[in-house]
Image (cartoon, rainbow, N blue to C red; front, side, top):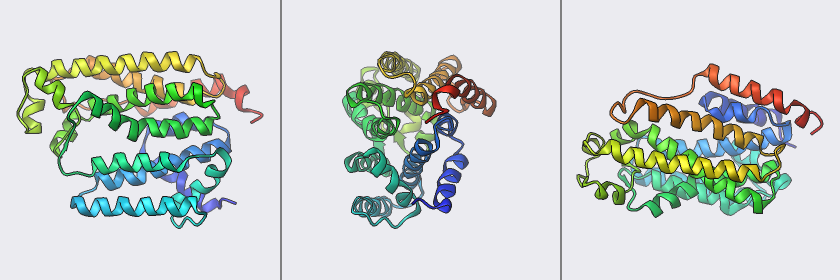
Length: 288
């Protein structure tokens, strides 16, 4: 049985991150909440490796260690607190090994000291690894039928990650990361490889507006896909969609010439969204 220590550790990892994810998932019944927190803690662990200072080879080695830990986890002998926390959800919800490995593959891309994305298709593939894969794990925990859940995972994962990319343009540029595809940059005559030069190019706001429009369409697609699912099971995904959609709205309102001006939801906004969703869902989860 999952120990109290491991459960508390996982909860502390998620809460300390300050993520909107924490508020969205608190409404779940304990079994599902512990499962989704464990998945998030795994994602946090590998993401922290990719974002850490250090040589590429060292970060790739640590991520390779996590590949080994996933092997141990699915062999029934996990060693780390996070993978130990995942052992029960894997049995309860049938979480798939290849989905965890997909997330690690996405982090291996991020671990590079020079991140560039060649095409829009490559960007979609990247988003699928780091975001849609997490959505697939969440759908299994929410017990959403795969045929209905897959379109949600794809559309919402793309929407969330594109929003993250647009939110973090300035910070990513400082560490030589550029997720806006070269294909889009070239279409606007932006060819300089330097990230700081790119984000200060006079045409860059136009490119950001185009990428924001793509993200907005993904949110529309996600809303349509969510409407086809059991409303009682899909509430956390809908909450994440509303949360990030508001962030995208704020980014568009701020504009693309003041990228150093941060955009986020306040704790009060996150809390209110959680409370309103909890009130709507109290009867839904009371017997789960």
